[in-house]
Image 1 (cartoon, rainbow, N blue to C red):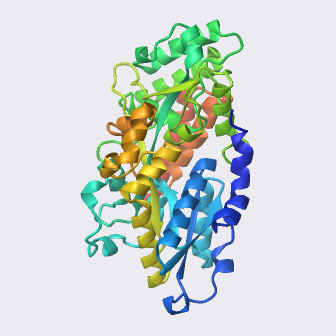
Image 2 (cartoon, helix red, strand yellow):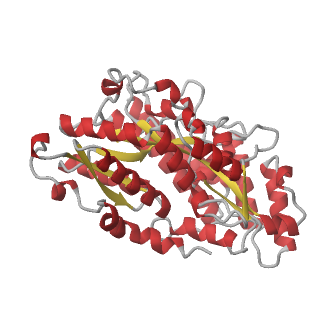
Image 3 (cartoon, helix red, strand yellow):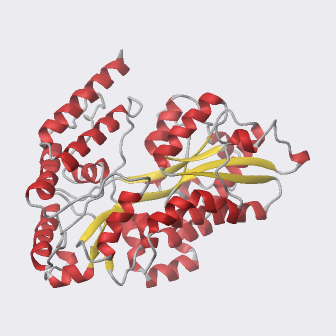
Length: 438
């Protein structure tokens, strides 16, 4: 059985640098003056975050890139999570110590693009005969293209939240995974698991807004009206879903969440509950697969809600190049992005982390084909991503999504009614929209 992942994740920012040349030094400490190839390889600073396994795999790919050529040397700095990376990138931009390349979530990269601090990557791809746009999955590539057709990011990988169920708990409760067609079915299964397995929680959604939003999308809901001008986060589709989760967690007590802690602590505690037979399953990232024991758990796609089709978010994690870096640093950053997203490296990444590869031709890589034949659960996230939703841009620079984070805590942690929490989020979102449109 694996050791506690939390401790290892929290230590990663200290250990990765010693093992692979990646570290936690800021750009101002690493670089002094401008880089030049005549003085050795150009140093390209890369900021990113991730769980234990993901951080290690990134470090491996960075090390392999550095050994594969002599023009550039990527140095990496790790953060606790995506939010911290974004916050530090913003501070770095303000203080003149930003990295050359960063791994960010979609909304953060969109916001930085709106602030005009990201390089237009299409200036590199348009003259690069090796860049094959058609080989990237549209659902992920398009999340790095703005309304003016500027490519401000290239997807490093895709992620989507899937269901991981405890095989023993399901069997003891007489539940067949294929019978879970709706969230209501999963709630019924959670009740049976709670009743049949003493001391076991039926299901554990992951703390935060994301699982709740996924279920809303699978209930036919949307964040905005069709014209994108009106916020819709307190519509019936939203209230129905969030109220159901409030009921399952606080009233029926067949579900629960873990919240708080440092970095990914809540996430790993949730995983531990399922692996230690304390919960019937949980909703988690495709990237969790590297940390799971599939003799204990199985994987399946998220269901629809009620009579609606499954449509959870399929999100890209984006590689962006900062505009204020030197031309040589930006060229090096682009070369690393190309390297990271080769079919072979995407296969390595997907096999070792569980995240979704962004290149179609990854499925032609022999090692990947052999792996998925033996590990069919690895294909579940890819299958779900094929019918996934793309979350819209928050035109307020993140204030609407922040309001939903607050609302999710009210519902999941405090047990506040979904309508009250979402009405407050709607009010905050409308005020934010009004300030943008002035």
